[in-house]
Image (cartoon, rainbow, N blue to C red):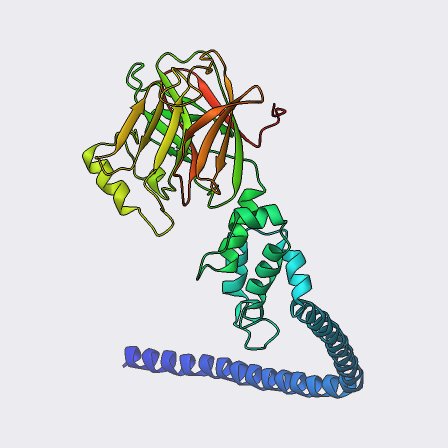
Length: 375
């Protein structure tokens, strides 16, 4: 019984202790609710009090945005006006012609491909169906001198941009654009000078350097070729048919006269309508004055040691020769110190490029024209 009384009293005491705690919690909830209510009410009051200043800020921002948009519209209008001026200028073929004077043929092709206004075919009678770029190239070619026009007749179906390329090449210095064979290289960074190259401990074999970008198709063409006197084997200068891409074939050696059977077959595959006549390769050896030529057919090849009119007068110690390819008369002539030694061969027709072949030490340079006084 006493134990029971204590237990009951203890439980009642615990209940009595819990009631104040519950009251405190309820009081805290009431106070917290009041604080939240006051906070909400205070927030509402604060918002109402700050409403007018915020409206002013919003109005200022809107006004600033409208001002920015107005300035952007002015800028856009000015930009559209400038673009319109440029587009208007580009529709003027004279302006395009002036621009073309600063571009090569590859650049013109790029412009034609990327700019619709300049590259699209014009159906109007003014340009005869040509695009603006083609018309600019045509006018550029038509402005060439009579001598240049005689050297560059336009082929049937040839584009004006292609003819424009050949005209630019005609006006530029001669360079050896193709090195065929592993035993030839440029001297430094000068593509107008080539030299023999040692491979495998000093082994030297035949190779050719060709002015592949400078194609001669008509008229008279002069070149001055200068070599060192330190050649220990062979060097030759002359003309060869255009052989596009042959510098990319990775040939070990290349000697066009007489070419190896497989090489001869590949050379024959390069034949085009511009290969007229049967003289496809012609040169003079600067080592001994002999003449070499070939039709690349295997049945008409000549090595003439002394069977050309200038052989007896040829000075083997002379390191500079002038050469004249006259496609009007079909001849290749040799000059030394301003004096004509003779004609290497006649019967030349169609397209040719200047070429240099050698095997051994030394170098050969080429220059357009001939500065000696002809006597």
